[in-house]
Image (cartoon, rainbow, N blue to C red; front, side, top):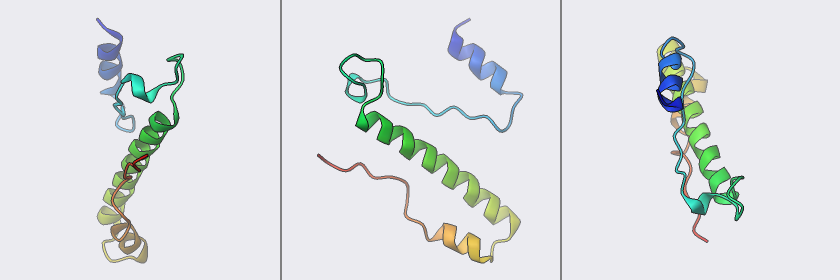
Length: 85
């Protein structure tokens, strides 16, 4: 059984755990290939921010749809946008 399969299997019992998939393309890593470069870090940050935004917006709509906090979450811009170099 592969590591990925074991990880997904052990996650099924935990509702609060999620995996964020990321490209493993060479362009996202330093020349040594060990660390993420600026673009790779930016993509991770965008993915985490999007997951957090989705989580809070679903919580706010379940709790009270008409509160000020829920309105602020609805008016936030959509996710991250890649900035061309």
